[in-house]
Length: 429
Image (cartoon, rainbow, N blue to C red; front, side, top):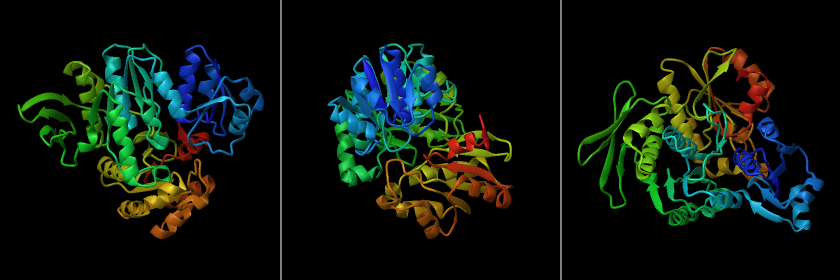
């Protein structure tokens, strides 16, 4: 089969391209973004930076990312030629049918790390799992793994109801908050979609019932698990009724919120029948996912962190972690909003969370699929917060070196700023 992927360099689309190629298909695609091109080309996938009518015409199936608008030239050609057109979610659903047990992780936050944790446990169990991830593993430096056909661990994105094309053996919901309201319109609609996702699963582990008190309740409100911390940031998972400590962990991932991700991964792998010893090994050996409170190398600043947080709740967790990790140090947060609509829909929450920091620079919005008229820009958010705004990389660099050369730098957001920093040698691989 010949596949043509529009938006092929997106983190999920690129992983799907690799899966298709490794299954013996001919794969090509287009994307204005250059991130991930080298990996695709090394695997024999052709990537075009402009529309390519000839490649579209040759394709049996055209796959479209949710970030692509109806005015895309390749998509128009595909429809004119009456090609079979699939959404990204539809393709993932089709690929998942090749696996005996699909473990799909959905939720507003934490799904990438939870997915990767589950994969790492299964890897330690030596069952050769397959993986589709919305991030890059720090250890393997990849967002996909083609393994055997028994276990397939995947993220399940709710945007455009993409996760409803999956019918998992185990479905995980990490949490549910207002998100992607440009599509769902209301939180009630979003909740309904998550309920549909859960109804598609044979087993469901609902992390939305994990509360900030570190206590988890089951569907009937009964107390199940308690999380205890000690001074060294180790923690144990204990069964409250029997008062039996299951496992004690010393993990390598920094953010406290990852405790919940570890618990969800524990539940999944225990349900699959793996021993506490294997689960412990998988959780403790996990090196993390890139851009999830990732400490990165910079020639000019001693302490630099890159974090993918783009929702106010995620940002608040990142700020808490930074203050905990870099005690008694001055911290500068550089935030790049992701989409105008998200900034508009969650404006009050963004304002509240950023009021809690002393030093903040707002970098120009990463628009993704949107136009300025779809919401509120980074410039407007900067004016509301009365903080510095940088419209390009040059102005940001000048500001950092002149006014903030003694700070810890924490870059926050799901946009292209980290890629630009690497490309311009400010950050080093």
